[in-house]
Amino acid sequence: MKRLHSIPTCEECILEHISVFKTLSREEIEQLNYEKGCNIYKRGNYLFHEGAHMNGFYCVHKGIIKLFKTGTEGKEQIIRFAQKGDIIGYRSVLSGEQACTTARVIEDAIVCFIPASSLMRLMKNNAEFSMALMKRTCKELGEANKFILDIAQKTVRERLAEILLLLKDTFDLDEDNILQISLTREELANLVGTATESVIRLLSEFKSDNLIALKGRKIKFVDEKRLIRTANMLR
Amino acid sequence: MKRLHSIPTCEECILEHISVFKTLSREEIEQLNYEKGCNIYKRGNYLFHEGAHMNGFYCVHKGIIKLFKTGTEGKEQIIRFAQKGDIIGYRSVLSGEQACTTARVIEDAIVCFIPASSLMRLMKNNAEFSMALMKRTCKELGEANKFILDIAQKTVRERLAEILLLLKDTFDLDEDNILQISLTREELANLVGTATESVIRLLSEFKSDNLIALKGRKIKFVDEKRLIRTANMLR
DNA sequence: CGTACCATTGAGTTGCCTCAAACCTAGTGG
DNA sequence: CCACTAGGTTTGAGGCAACTCAATGGTACG
Image (cartoon, rainbow over all chains, first blue to last red; front, side, top):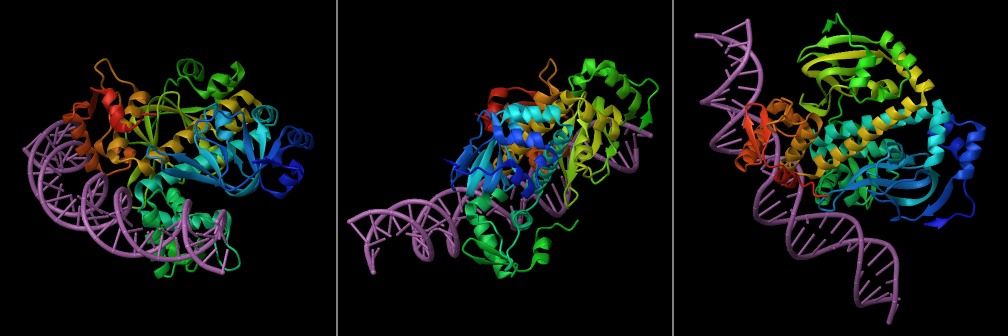
């Protein structure tokens, strides 16, 4: 974690990314820009740990962060990812609870820190911002509920297929249909909620079924339609 | 579902129950009272179905509602319960999405309906209410995340024990340590995320281990300490 | 007193996990 | 430049928790 020489201004950042901050007035943005801090984080760095008391939240300018909870045996369960424009840790600030996840960098990142007081002031004075943030939270809650259903009822095979498709929607493919996020097999397993070996076996099954192609951590989408079918996402 | 002759007023209701509405002014309560509707629902009745477009949300005055999602094979996954003072369906109103769960009555209920417009007006004009609702949502999100971890990593045995303890905290015990909510074995299974038969087998194991006592659907807590231990909730 | 729903028990199967060993790859330092 | 190491990946074998299917038993209610 390093201080930055040239901090990205909130103005350009908000213009660039779709975010809850779109609702802010010019003055509010200026003040935010003044109050925020910004740091560089390398892969493997932590932003905060589960159980931490949060006196502010983070906004990702660049890079990818994983948010996970740690189980009794030390195994991680990835809850979600955050990338450019996404905010992290606001849940704890707003609920007044400790952080319910750990945030760790997956791809080198530039992340701003916004103090809790700024968030509270915005919540109080800008109903539109309040509403946008509320919307964000409600969406996340809906996704969490959906994930509960999946993990409770779907097979690992279906879940893996679904996760791949979800990753595709979140991080896009390049011109060769290759997924633009690089995860270890273990991270994939921690996302699906299964053992690393299971992910490996299923991935190579998917490969021999010609659903995907593999090259190291690169995953290429070959037959998305059939992938959707194996994910059992017919509705 | 029946219209009520004597509708409970929001004033008495708010005084009685701890709820997000505690933040409302006298005038706001009066207006809410005027705009809301109220109905009686019998066990088995539906308030709304997954996928429904919500033009308002519900506030439970009495009774118990289960909120669940339905999987591909028709199996339910219970997401949460709602009882006196709890609100339902607000997530969909705020996110502008369809209902992500179905709401069905478990114990005969009296439930008020509050139009979306009222909610939006309160959100806009009362920052304190906004904040309280935000807090509620964030708490729920935290719980959902915790549930994802549990369901992904814990054994069915551990989860069942944990769910029993959670039910205890939510619905309390009577003077004989008997859980004050009556669920079918299937509902318990749909909550834990397992098969009905598994719940039955584990419950009778818990019973022969003297952790609980059973009498039909009544569950009596005998040895809570050891139940906590079998739930693996040491932290 | 039949019917419908729920609960229980048994038996058989399997998806997925665990453990263990081997292999690959990239980075490091002599 | 190559050996060495560490971290990640792959494959195999074996075991078991939990599921499915099926049959029976209980209980409540009209």
